[in-house]
Image (cartoon, rainbow, N blue to C red; front, side, top):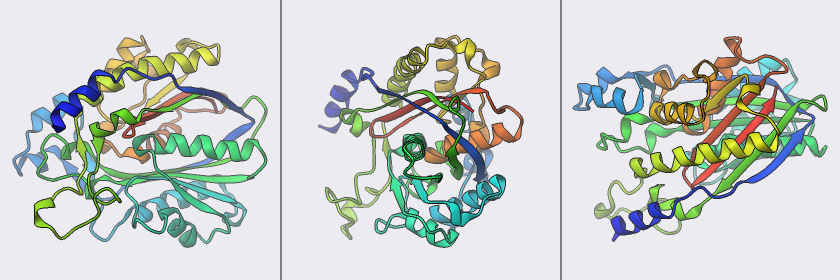
Length: 346
């Protein structure tokens, strides 16, 4: 029955039209990221029975970071936020909103953003935004709207996930894909020509069965029933997700560029959600993007979900790949199904 439902869902998963928008007069003034110290290489997994060659050929991943048992999502988020605040050189007391994108919270209640807000000593409202691997893009657009409308002056946006805690170690096709990390940016009012020249966001709940966690919500609460062991782990139909993403990226990037009346020739750098190198290479080829414009760090961190884009953004910025005035295209996608693509004038 589950297989039939998945096939039916997969068959109708054509890209849905995104909601388009524009948000100018907002800029990023600080950036930071954090990855755990524990490096898990493919050869480490091979010793446990994983296929090193398959991992590289199918994903492009060489290693990933796993948080130590005493490290939670909030710990990574706090460290990334502190580095971001230091990079911006601002007083944390001036931050008036905290948005945290994550699907792996420390607790189901309260929001992990509240825990991060307390440890940073902020005097600001805080809330989680959950859109899986698109969480950071959703959170960043939301934060920019607060700034653009004058509701906030300085917004901290964090993307953080401890994926290693929710992926089944026995699932040899999924477990090697994911890593743990956090990334953060600070948003503030900018010049009228700075901000999002265009953005496209959307969701398609018909694809929910392709990537989800069965247990832990009101549909299937946690239980001591041993017959339900493993139901708290992430479930993913990788092949179906791959097909959907490839179609989606072609559609959403075209929509975003068209809305801004620009082409890929006008874009200085492209950062895709770092999910799978085959997806990135396919999108690069299908859209005729100059490979030199595409930044990747997937090979060293794996899929870090909500942290993926801000982590890559931070590394690209520190490497001199992003400069003030550059046009940068970001695209996030994942469970929900949810997606968000933005074209930013940095």
